[in-house]
Structures are given as structure tokens and as C-alpha cells.
Image 1 (cartoon, helix red, strand yellow):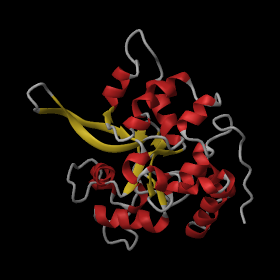
Image 2 (cartoon, rainbow, N blue to C red):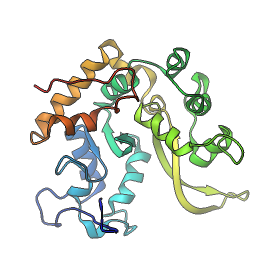
Image 3 (cartoon, rainbow, N blue to C red):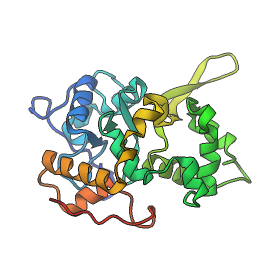
Length: 258
């Protein structure tokens, strides 16, 4: 969804196009088929939910056809991970491929070990303390995280960047989108993101099941799969989708695309 001359342009297909995804169930089926998928258009042609849906139906608020609503439904169902996973932008990762992204993006580290080795920021630590081992199954509205982790007036700054970095490193994902409730229990306002750990969705053993292989081997596995699914993608395009940029990771990975 690029901004061209100050105008947001949506790319997509006609309803009758054989590549069109018509329902949220079709979208989930396709995500599971390809393994992972950005929400919006990116450098790889056709590799997004945007480009496989009807542009006019976005933000129609009709759950039958609106992909913007589908992302809420997909996050809520918990069959596919949703978050800012691709170059700090939103997308989906299937349950099958999640452990490999976790292994590569975390560089084989649980967050506590990352912190102990001096590879996590104090701001990240304040957020992840809310999901300590005994609290792994907690779910928090984004505004609750801000409050509890001290990202308030006069306190910590950079909440959006910090919460995005934790999603890029696969420590958090968007579990749901819910409206807040007042003291009477009545809902109000727009739905906002609810964050949880991937371990909350699928269990620690499953989420970390790829820790047994080298993180760069997981990256290569993802890279080869993406080349099979989208053979037109270049090495640079694949690397942008797969990994964090240099400086956000212990050592930048130079992948040989086979």
C-alpha cells in the first residue's frame, strides 16, 4: 500500500481473478500453503494479502470480505501468528514455519538469556517483564503495556519502536484486537491490539522446537522455501523479508541463495 504523490494506492485483483482470496478461511488456507505472508504490498510482486484481495473491500468493515477485519479474525483464532514480522511491517506466519522464524530472529535466545548477555534494551526488558515465565500466558492491551511498563508522560519513550522490535525478534505477537471496557463493563472505542507471547498460543516446547538447529540454518530453510514459492524474488528481496537489518542482530547474515 504505497503512498504515491500523497495518495494511498491499494493494489489487488478482481473478484473473478483466480488468485483472488474471497474469505478469511481462504486467506488462512493460503497463508498455511505459502508459510508466511506480509499484509501489504512489498518488494516481492504478489507476495502480500493486499495483492490477492479486492481493493474496494478494504476498510468496508464487512467481515465477510474486508481483509482489514480478517487480520483481527486471524489473530483471534490463534492458528496463524500475526504481528509486525516483516521489515517492521505487519504480516502472518503459519504455525508450521513459526519455530524457524523464532530460532533465526531470536538467534536461539530466550528473552531472559538475551538480557543476561547484554543483547536486549532496558525498554524491551520492562515490557518483557510483564510476560515473565510465570506470566507467559498473560494478554495485555497495548495501552496496558504502556502503563505497566512505564511508557507514560515523564517516563520511558519510544514505545512503538520497542514493541515493534520485540515482534521482529518474535518475542511478542498480536493475539487479538479488542475494544476497551469501562468500569461498568461496557465496550467503547475502536478495537486495539492485544499482545501475547507466541508461547502463549502454541506452548514453549513447540515454539522453541527449532532451537536444535543453528539460527542461520533456519534462515536458509526459510530462504529456500520462499524461493520455491516465489521464484521471481531476488536475494535482496528475500533477505529483507527474512531477517533483521544489520545492527539489529548480533551478526548480519549473508545468505547464499541456492
